Length: 277
Ligand SMILES: NC(=O)c1ccc[n+]([C@@H]2O[C@H](COP(=O)([O-])OP(=O)(O)OC[C@H]3O[C@@H](n4cnc5c(N)ncnc54)[C@H](OP(=O)(O)O)[C@@H]3O)[C@@H](O)[C@H]2O)c1
Image 1 (cartoon, helix red, strand yellow):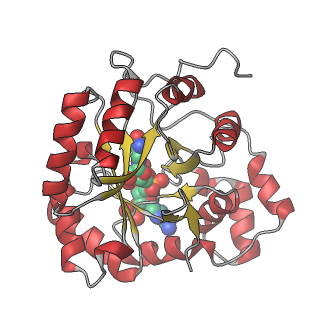
Image 2 (image 1 turned 120 degrees about the vertical axis):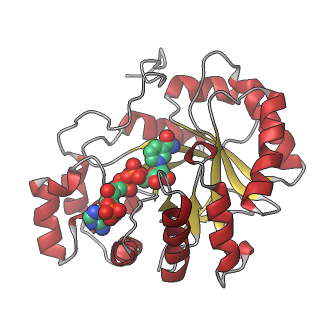
């Protein structure tokens, strides 16, 4: 059973979702269709992934009611002006074939556009009923502080996160600000091969992927693993079905920290808050 996390008084999100980066065309359609079939009720896409049409088609082809699916998408970093956000949200609804988006994120910050302008445009969309909640992605503490100036409720920050890149300071800031965290690329970085992860997988008779996903959920974060393999889809979805002890969770909390896997030239990770440790 996938636990739910409350984002607002009216909106909750399944804590395990299905990631769709690089899943396009027939492969994308089949992957999302299989994910819904095995029980995923939270799909993560983005304008940049170029698969809105496939995601929408898979949702419509499923036997699952739209209201039972949590759908996240993201506006790209060169479309953050008000006029572009308003136009893009209308286009997303058409491409996805849906009347609303559950969560709309700013995919990456772009220092050339005011975060306040973008968030206020997103808030217009929320008030028009086109999106249910507003979030961000790849935001540092500095970006989040700037975002708070918009006076718009930000419910989520989607960031790269796995045991060897666990971002404790940013998580603490998000926690204090009432912003939930979604962990992306939880498996891709190679943590599945870490000896501590492997030892815990042996102890709990589960897979290394499940150890990582379980740790993320127990630490009260949402996670969006991706796979094209239906058996792995099920395996990842079942990652919340057991409990590791606090001592074992703490082993993963204290793994040596490495570097991020997703580090594009346009990323603004060097932008840290003056008050950050
Ligand atoms: N906001 C952002 O900027 C951002 C950036 C990156 C990603 N994301 C989102 O996060 C999602 C997930 O991140 P990601 O795609 O980078 O990586 P990921 O989910 O961490 O890893 C995917 C890789 O792990 C393998 N895998 C999945 N489940 C497995 C299992 N149980 N056992 C062994 N291998 C397994 C997959 O291979 P197979 O397919 O062969 O199983 C694939 O190679 C994306 O799809 C996207 O929705 C967001």
